[in-house]
Image (cartoon, rainbow, N blue to C red; front, side, top):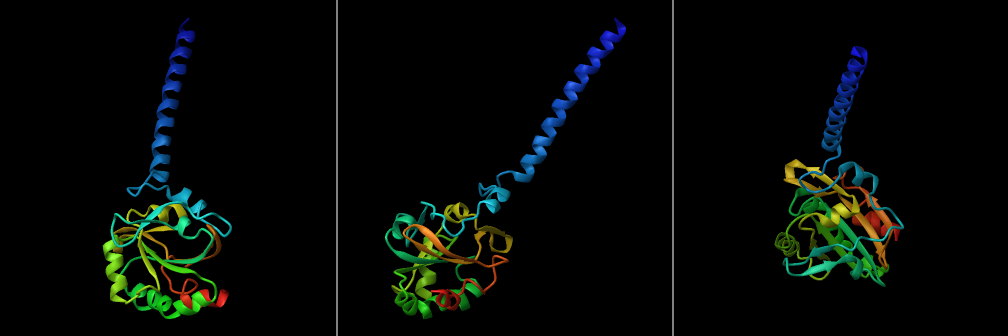
Length: 205
């Protein structure tokens, strides 16, 4: 009987330890893959980044004010649009190179069949409007704000840039035709100024 009782106690202890260990492993796993304060699973997002052939997500961004929502899937319906994204409005590389390049090449890009050029950044719409006015984009480029990074996260193209305050978009450019991605160029480090530049997009059209 003593052995039986000992076996019962040991079995109960083992079961308790297994439960505790399982809970601890769950906590570790949830820390590793947990939602960040931006509500995104980093590992999952990496595995699910948008690719050529995918439909662009139906997620709103904003133009000029928070009341003016723009859905880029709708904008691209029956059309061929170019979207380029920057880590931040008014930042040096974006202001000196990326945006000015698209302003300069806008007419030529449109002559190649692009019906609309869109710039997206994780900023508020007032900042994006001011940035566009500062560069005199006029009607060449639509300046759209991904206020809560929902569009960027839905693409799987977010990055954490502490120096800019947290979650931002990787630098990329893409062609979307009738809702589907037909060309995608993501900077390898998310910040560089190479494959996503206007001249490189123009060369591929």
